[in-house]
Amino acid sequence: MKIELTPMEARVIGCLIEKQITTPDQYPLSLNALVNAVNQKSNRDPMMNASESEVQSVVDGLSRKHFVVEKSGFGSRVPKYQHRFCNTEFGTLKFSPLELAIVCELLVRGPQTPGELRTRASRMAPVGDGSEVEAALESLHTRDDGPFVVRLAREPGRRDSRYAHLFSGEIAEAPEEPVAVAPTPTANVAPATPSRLDRLEAEVKQLRAELNDLKQRLGA
Image (cartoon, rainbow, N blue to C red; front, side, top):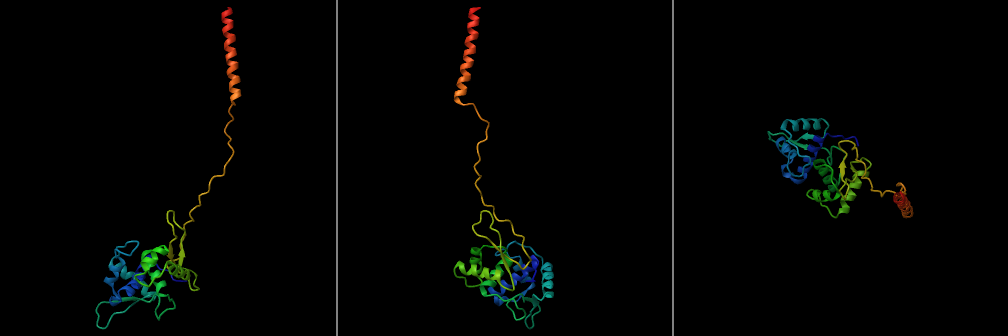
């Protein structure tokens, strides 16, 4: 896979895919609508506050890469934009509905667990049980024209590993959570202490010495 998007490019592409699926009657998007989608307060991570000029610059760059095209309706004075990133007649990158929903979620919301993806992708594609999401993730990871996603090392305190998209390049994975290993028992090497018998013998010697001293004093 040779696609490499900046984080902002990934957000713009993800927003165009999302709105194409969820609000088809409002798609393609005007620049103002795309800015609102990029800065949307829900279903986004991280939160952004991109300006219109910043989004326009990203759109222009994506247009040069042939990932976005201006598609205004007849008589429209407002330029509108649609993606050519995937599932179009202009490219070979094709995803199933569930795969596309997962890719979209990863583009707009970052790394997520299969459980999170199952819940969030359901607004864009039919999702059955968790095994369907796992199978789609496995397909995205093992496809000949991929991989498109990678499984990240499980973070401390999390039960499941998260998945991330690879459209912005390879990801330096965190090391696996270390497994706690019980310390190997070692022999007690503390300094030896006198036994009870030795202590008693020492006390007897001390008492004898004191007794002899007392006899000498009395004899004097």
